[in-house]
Image (tube, rainbow, N blue to C red):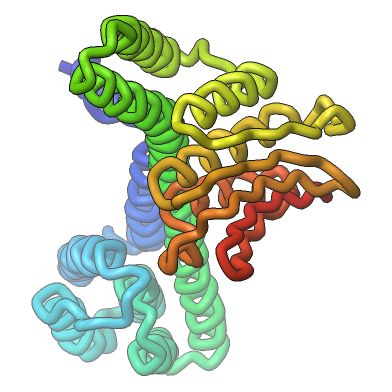
Length: 375
């Protein structure tokens, strides 16, 4: 039975749950020990005043239990100010109010110890509440509970200082526990954000791969349909190219899903030129001086810019050039709506921003320009 309790209560918990369990149990145990030490130390006069000591022992146990109940509710409420749990708080306060005159009526030196038991019970039970009014009232109540039974100023000062220290101990313990919980939540949020970012990256890559391939397939299929309508034998060859493109797109999608696919600038430029020329668009390249470290980001820009030319323009020529740390993709067929970046360019801009580069777009008459500005 003990081994099962250990596994279920400690080994089966994560680090945050262990800190939570340790903090809670430590507060309960220390609170019980403080009152227990006072009750045991008062046992020396049990022979002379057995009835009085019995009353002190019963009252001390009742106050300790009520203090633990209130402490449990304070832990549950922290770090919120309210509403203050009424049942546990009122039970502890009522017991303290009844215990003060009862402690004053005890014989011998028992009133002093009883006053400290009452004060410490209030400190542990109510010290965890964040409401300043409750905290102020608790400090006043601790001082009165330590002073009224024995009317000893020294005893009252000791009870007040010790009770205030116990309140501070409870508050700091709960504060540290709350920090641990918040850090764990932050770690979970960071993990969820990392998953979301990876999904966003994957969706962008899928958009780039499938957008490019589907645009190519659409152009080739349209050309094949035109040739077939004319009875041209070249239509069959175009359809074979469409099939080949579909297989290549499927292969790239699989590589992307497995995380093996890398973006190559030369391949993207070659594919862009072939695609544009098959659509009747003249393409020129002048990117020999582009730094090798920026080939992959440049491939993103070229891929998305060419895809947008096929989808959203009436271009007859496209140029890709690099000069003065700026890669420029320019076409001469901007439509009236070409001033909008679209989701594709917005995704590329976000990816470039993480590398310190920028992406700019501009429209001048019928010319639409996409620029990647290196840092």
